[in-house]
Image 1 (cartoon, rainbow, N blue to C red):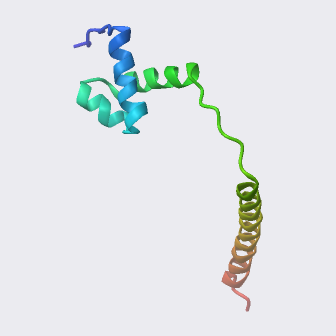
Image 2 (cartoon, rainbow, N blue to C red):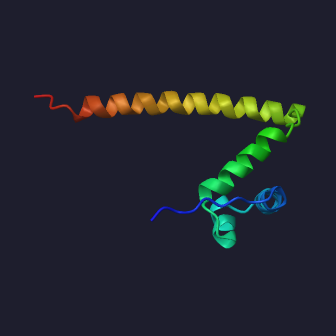
Length: 96
């Protein structure tokens, strides 16, 4: 049997979205509490976030330096990982 489509007031939608945004609770949990489908509440939250973008603060100088350091370290670790994969493949071959 098909589910009947419900319509919710804008005030109800706003309150439901506020429960997700302000408390940082998962959409699935709030939807279950309110008797909504996860996708329905997810759509409402997504629409709210698109119409109310949050501006990110630019990184401070120490944070930028730390980010650059972490990116360099990440790059080096990826290269090491690739090398080890190739070495493992080489040694896994039968050399008779």
